[in-house]
Image (cartoon, rainbow, N blue to C red; front, side, top):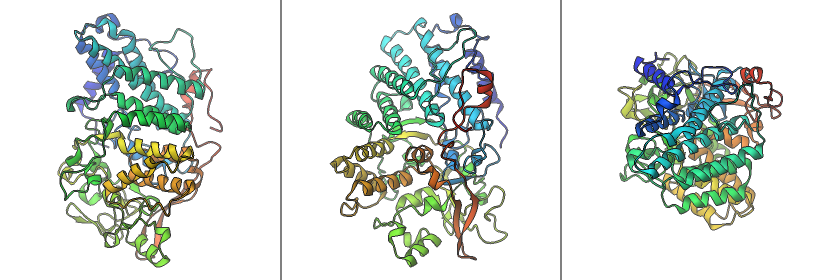
Length: 540
């Protein structure tokens, strides 16, 4: 891993001193006593509010490693905990999860928990003190507070989805000797909904481009949609999604250049400004090329797609590989892009053997080649991630400036149609309407309503659409947990490309998933030890 730049060290140190962050303490939910700049000296001017708010935004996830203070918060690498990818970087620990080796002392288990609560405390501190600052525009002052509230809700939601019911923290300091307890599932849901409703009331539907990254009314509705779909409250999920759709603030991105596939353009510099973004982090793909591109192009190929995701993409005719004859299926497994007859989202998301990318023909199977499979900093599966890996970054692979979309409109539309199907309303016209919009944007045909003509068949289609539409964006972990399919897809070997010398798919590792334990992460051991009121998740 590259050494951290001194400027970044200084920035982080300054932020910690100004805001009194004590995230370095291991008992971060037990006590928090600011020792640097005091509140009476800090909360005076509008610029103070702006600086404090920007620090709270700083905990939002990046796609690939780009925030050295928060390595675990890299959502493309999080794919390595699922069936869609294998992680083998020289940093991070995502590779331990799918093989059953994660523990309550795993680094990312503690880092995400600890860091998220540090940002929650900072947001709470903001809300406790922002009224002291002078801001001429009172509506803008109220908006700042609503942004902080929505951010606090986001961090709680992220923790909830990873660890299960967690402590609700809505104050920056705890009374001496007080130890927090985990709240119930219902309490967490009710808290999040109320926080997001309150925030949405003071937030705009849209911003100018310079402020487009900020929490908006639509972001709040999107977070409620995501919350409800993951707790199985489909009726409320539908209502939240419809509120977002009714804003008319978002749309699927379509490239103005007919030579660029709209789906692939969305993850490149050509589509960096778009109305599909609901929540994104600016410049959060700094090292996307360096971390994910092939070794022969100066990359580290840290997170590699598996055959499980590659073989999920349909043909251009809308057929799955399992619907083809045995001979055709075998051809596509050997040559995924055979005659360029696959869902264009495959070519936009994955580099395959034999493909030419930038100026290299990728060959993971010839001995002595720079991209030989299984070597250090080379692909482990024979495939490479292409999404967010823009050829324009090849010259300076560690210095890209792409944003990372944390939530985009396509995801919310997929949540919406999934909720409709799960309520039994699978024939609702909106289901096919929005699925067709998503498929057509990528260059795929309409849904075959003669084939997908039952609730079960429509559920199958929607789950496949989510897998290929949102590949490597950090959503797969939550999906296989929600559907309770992790115990199936993560209890088998992780395979890669077909080795032409053997005619068989490369086996990377045997994976293991314990359904009695692994549907949530453990509470960090350091928190269990420091807080006598904290209960561990079952079987951890």
